[in-house]
Image (cartoon, rainbow, N blue to C red; front, side, top):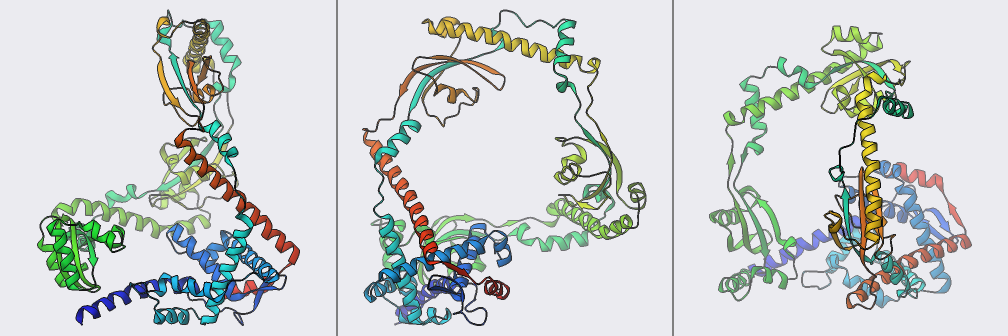
Length: 619
């Protein structure tokens, strides 16, 4: 009798958990009826009205989905900023259009189909798979729905699904598209290539003559011209600038140590799985079979219709478990099985996968780390507390020099140009403001990513200026030599290309080639010019080409081209998958066009005022 009660309790616990999810899907954040009546229409498509309740359910469903995707709760206001309300409005208009068309052509599903769907709803089933009437009535009551309302929801969903299926089911793409696609992306090529470097030249590149230096300097003035710069005066204050002035006594550090006890004093833990049974006898039989070697724990889990994710407890400490379960698990000093153990869900077998010992860090050992954290936090707080006073000084007309004299902020200046990321410009916040500040702008306190603050003022714009040749002579000489070396390597590459086309090999030309096989269009070769693979697929079989990019010059020769073989056994599955995906995409596009035509034919009305009222009253 006790075992049966436990099994029933276990069943009910899981059923109610499923019901909680179902209720959320039906009601949405507790909203059941908004405005003066949930049956009011926020719009219509032809004669098919869209009730407030239908709109609210759809809106909350989208907000929940977005919240789950982003991992945080998204409010209606945030959702509207992302266009969720417009997306939902389009969705309910499509639903109304399809419902109206179903009514026009007399398409519906019978009571038998509704019953079948109802009985198959997992949230309305016990663990034995039987329909649970109490669960069904509880869910509808909390969703503010009558059985008839819910039947109509099921009937409408089934009917719309039937119409959509009938519209798109006949769209079946053949292999033509798949073969064309795979003929392009499925082709592979083999080739050999060699990069040419300066050490292959017969002699090093000479130094340029004064005339050549002068000519290059005049031909490329933009290369030797300074960037436009903003001369900026600024004051700043960061936590690091205050740390040395902050004292921390042991009392404060010990208080922080207590607050961080979950970091410095981690109790012993076990990584475990819990498999719950309907009775102690069933649990013991399963444990005996596992111990005897006639089955495995994983096999028992699978036989129960569960996955390892379903039974995974993760890391647990004694406090996470019942007294009996904690005693059983923490008796083990190495991974293993224990049980049967009574739990809140019923008798269970536990599998301990790992034993994690307690980790205790003394105050003495943690003191240095605590001190760093404490003074950094105090510094950030001091800066935060000073912002109001600094704002008041600026509002009262204080200059940056005066601000530095009256506060802890330090005065400095910088000639900033786009791309600088040193000193104060290492902060993105400074770079963003420095790029947009105007001379007439007044300084304002701005925050830095590390908890610091700054304020800046533009003094002047320094126009670009051609540097004197005397300052950049070394750069000009280097640039000339680089260009001359590249020119000589291109000449060498052109000769190598001619020799390879004449039947010579890389090896005969004293070059060590890299050999690439089964290369596809999307492949990338780390050490080669970035365009090498693209260029290779534009070449004919046995062709030779010179490829240049990123300062590299290479010669490449195709050795084999392998087209996609649509007759190969493995190709059939690929083509089937492409055809199915292509058919689905076409079907979706056609259904979108079909529902748009239904809306155009029936006509759309929208009560924007009521929609605004709905939004105002939603939480």
